[in-house]
Every structure is written in structure tokens, then in C-alpha cells.
Length: 279
Image (spheres, rainbow, N blue to C red):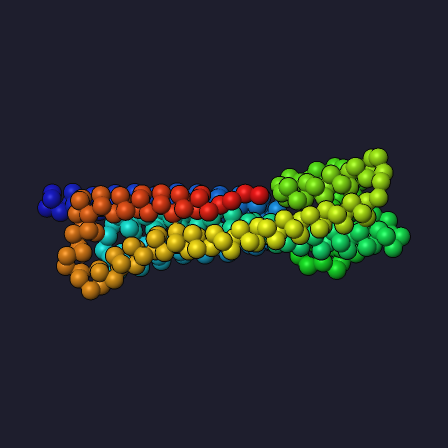
């Protein structure tokens, strides 16, 4: 009787502790997603309900580790996937920001040529910027519209450009803002300056494209080197579950898995570092 009572108490306490841990995880994810939505996503001009983001993230945290456990029966992989899902929102937001900045850099030369043409036709700077905000695709049009909105709210051109420089920390955009500031302060032919800058950025993009093509094989090798061992482990687990069970259910197997993860991660980042050439 006493043993049964003690076992019941232990089970209840364990369930209570698990619920507390899950509650802390949910609160942490809620705060993280709210912070992400209120800062980075707003900076990207992406407006999503934080409750939907939280629901999706908690579903991923619950579903993916469960699937890994059902397939591998490995607590190490299950915990690793659960931890990865905890940081999935941050990774996704970082990728979205990188894609947005790349699109902006790609669109900037055409926008500069349009701005130079508008200035040559006799338009003022703000009117020419309005044309870009209306005619160019996002994100260039969104950022220029934000610049004009800041000016309508009473900020000077220099202050509005400084705010955009914090949102768009890129050398290409800083060259554009420097050209506008110099033209506003000392004068000069802004249209010719912007056209020359546009041609420079186009040549820079061409060189970067050639380098990216030449280093594509190295990037693919990094992905193959990282993914092939994982795929091989899963295939062997399906074909030979008996011998592979030692890899997932023993301390030696867990140590081997940890070593594999460390070496694979190091190799992936080393290759990416080698093929990452800055201009």
C-alpha cells in the first residue's frame, strides 16, 4: 500500500514538473515571438498575428520531436530536434531579412537610373522619389515610401536617411545616401552621380554573380557532405534496425552521434567560409 502511494505521488510530481517545464517553454516562446514580431518583422514590414506564430511554433515543437521519437526511438535526436524547433523562429526571421536585403540590392541600380532620369526631366528630388515609390517593386518602393513618410512627419532628409541606414546596413545604400547628402549640402549634378553609382553597382553585381557561380560547387558540396551521412544513418536504421539500435540507445552511440554532429557542423561552416568571398 505504501509503495503504491509513493509511486502515485512520484507520478503526480513528475507530471506536475513536466507541466511546469512545458509552461516555461511556452512562455519563453511567447516572449521570443512577440519580440521578433514587434522588432524584426515590423522592420521587414511583415505584419503577422503573434498568436498564430506562437501556435505554429508550439505545434512544430510538439510534432517534429514526436515524429523523430517514433522513427528513431532516440532521446538524443528527439531532444536535439526539440531544441532546434525552439530556435526555428529566429532562423526563419534571419533568412527573411537576408532575402529582403538581397532583393533591395538587386533593385537599387534600376531605381537609381529611374531617379536620375526623373531629375533630368526637371522633377524635384521628392517628386522623383515619389515616382520610385509608385513604380518600383517591393522592397525598394516600400523603403522609399517610408523615407518620404518620415519627411512628411517633419524629419529632415538627413535624419530620414539615417533611420533607413539603420534598417538597411549595406554599403550600396550608404553610397546612395551619401550622394544625396553631398548633393543637398554642396550641390552638384545629382543625376550624373546617381547614374554613375548605378553603373558601378551593376558591375559589382556582375562580378558577385560570377564569383557565386564559381563557388556554387563548393556550396553544394557543403550541403551534400552534411546531408549524406544523416540520410545514410536513416536508411541503415530502416534496413538494419537491430545493429543501428546501438547507435541510438547506448552511451557509446550517443557519443558517436555527438561527434558526428560536431564534425559535420564544423565541416559545413569551414566550407562555407572558404567559398564566401567578399567584394
